[in-house]
Image (cartoon, rainbow, N blue to C red; front, side, top):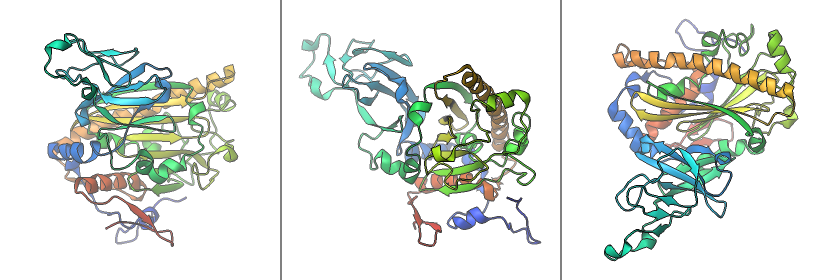
Length: 424
């Protein structure tokens, strides 16, 4: 793959990705979308309250009575997710029907019944109101109508999703669409045995944070210390992607990995036992058809962006996720988790720890740019910014945001000649 060239008029020769998706604009993006309070409130009402959101994984709730709490500022609520006595996972607004107090104050736990600390109203794991102290002093209290308020809850590949509308217009499979089915067969259940997580608050707009992780253009520069030449080569100096795939709201990229990299002595030992990200011995037959669909030999991982704020990036034998939760126009909670299968040997455990440290160093470098970017966007010194062909996931994401705010369709048609175009 070669670097993009330009002619005398400045027109990009290497616009193959935008040529594939001609409905996307090629002009600059307004900088104010990262700083406008009005824009932020429109995103709250027209996006986050209208879509499925990932809040965790089933491994967090192994037994009946296990629960966790997810505060979602963008939806102006707190969600209580619990595994019931029947084994099903359900979700409710974390709110007492009496005077509105939060029912669960801790982040996670296990119980047989939820009891409000304010006046002792108690609820079953199914959300039903079970006990009201001094009930005879209330006026025609209809307990069967006063359970915890449910939100829609469903599971995809072990990931727990909620929708604050208890009767959403789309089911979770419909919302995930082709991106969801493309990951059928990936062994999320076995790989999710071991994980490491990081959570931090970033003083930056959620889209600015998200955009930093849905392009690979920065890799050869920002990660030249943590992963030198891992994602670039002499033939591919700017880490051009192997493939991009756009869906109605979501997007995916197959990322280049330098298979001819000479690793350090420590990395060489890790590679012998299935290291993280860069390897030379992928078993293509072990990958589902939707992962590295081109079966490219220089592949290292697929970057999957589930709109609006959830990433599932998969390789062979490991994967990692990002969640970017807006809490203000210029503040975002960033939660990142790295997953491995349970190590069976000391060598595998060493390789996983090497991958864990490498990933930590990479995301620390990523995080270094975010607040600096937001500070300068807030200065107003620049009114717009420009995207290149390889930043098509960034452009697609902004296009979806704009269309949802304006009430336009976000569907993408795939025609018989292989070209994609948006619905009118």
